[in-house]
Length: 220
Length: 216
Image 1 (cartoon, rainbow over the protein chains, first blue to last red):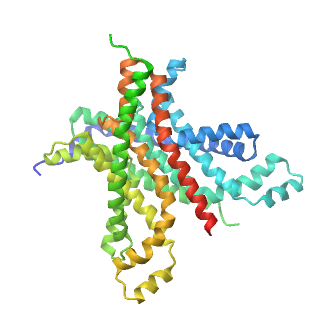
Image 2 (image 1 turned 60 degrees about the vertical axis):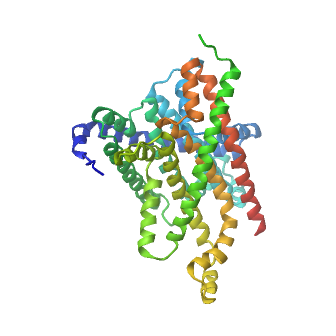
């Protein structure tokens, strides 16, 4: 191989890449929080809601889980304006991420809720707790404790999947890498650097979530 | 000017769907073979091989598939080879699939009771023979459901090959959208076709999983 890798040529673009990295982190954090909120609502609707609502949620979950994220993104960004709903690329990216993680976390949280013994719910109700109190204090806290590892890995999968939002020119890390590559043509170098940044981010997220889990779910 | 009717759009998308299916099948089978080799290395108890597979899996599971596609597409070119999107997509998807399948199968191998290993080694079976005749036949039974489930991820993963210019379903959708300016219709159809490919597999995986639970 006669080619020499030239990482020095990336140096002038450090601020572009850093901005992209920050965008990816913010995108992940916001869509994690909002996606889990959607997932919790969806899971509660599927297990405790009326039958028709449960079926609507089931269709939403299956539609999202069985189509690629990039198609969902294109549908939201290119398809919805045809119905009169115009979104900026950043809004579309956030929305697509939330909808995607919402569907996956609905399924994960539902599994957690179904693992809560029925006797616990009945016991809560017989103590004159309202339906909401039972959901909050009896069902959800047990469910989240059980599914926390599965939810953590889903968050990392979604974070890695967010690389695709660069395709609608939302300015994430991959977009920054594409931008730099189009300027200095050091494609391999910049993508290698970006891939390592993603790897580091994934490892960091994993240990951060693990530490957070230890704090939230302290052994009582 | 050329006009596209609904049927033109649909038939063009279905032609492109063939390439999604071909790419998925190649990635899944080649990924399965590489994954099986990696599985033998991962469970071999030889430190160097285990470390290699650990790093391999960490890299392919910890970086976006899109980055891997870019790295293969631009990386192989550095060695002076002309890389078609087809070759880059096949290679990247194969390695990506193998990393996930290895981890899934490792879980299944580890679910086999330790006594099976001990019994077979006391019968003087070598490591390869233990895997071939004792462990894998049992592990493969529990591996079917998650493997079928993962095949859905492979089909969805092939959508990213569109970004490096491989013409499959998603790329065909983008091209048709550029020609017809009917994004809502085109992307709805694209999503629907993916759903028709993936949903039966998801459903089947769930069914097998349920059947396994009953058997216990």
